[in-house]
Image (cartoon, rainbow over all chains, first blue to last red; front, top):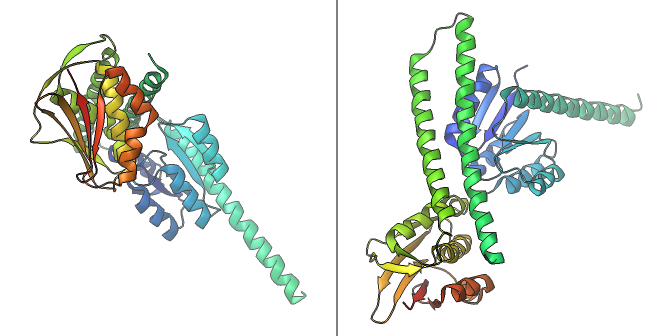
Length: 142
Length: 210
């Protein structure tokens, strides 16, 4: 199944080429060069993974991550940044990011992390479905 | 160098290195895409010449960008060479605008040189004057409205020269904070300059008595 990915980064030249390379790897990619627009997209669409930069105008990556996780705690967010200080990395992981990677990144590494994100997400969905079924069966006394 | 000076040195080099990282990341993606295209060509796909031409333009753009960043870093490194140096204010203000632009843009604020500014000559410690202006610009960018501009200018008065930072609209409290900021006062003392604020016009004036 094609992974559905959202890339949020204010470096347009970067995001254009990265999205093209992920498309070449048969991923379904959307992009956003503004954190606010990216946040809106993250709430409307169901992505397997969001790849998010930390340093952006208007709303920085940490704030964007926090807002996304508040609305959707199951969202799989990978931080991809040129500014991966240890404290920012720890903060991002505490807020729920699944990984923090530094630019420039090897495409295979990013692709692997997106695969992992998709697998995590499928597991979360399956677990939720399982719990729902269990509750339903318990309530009906089957 | 004072503790504040070291902090400033760290802030500027961190900001510049981040910009360079972004350029490296774009070059990395271009090289990667080239590799993808070559692999696809080996598997029988035709090379997209138009796409190659766009990549060449993009790479040339990133080389120009990195050259500008490294030039800015080099100017900054040499700003500490001499205790007193003759500077032309316009060149100097344009330089501080360039090196602070990445951080001001994080707050959706831009800085620019006023058209009516007077290009004056100063004998100053370039490093500490950069430090002083950097602090005022970065603090201002966090306090003025998103989308607003910081307008810089220089002017000769009867008994003194001045660098003016106009913020268009800002609270009196912010201007008071600038006037009483410990780090700003330390930089002013090192330079032997004074500061005045104009609440009505939201303007900060650095008074240079030499």
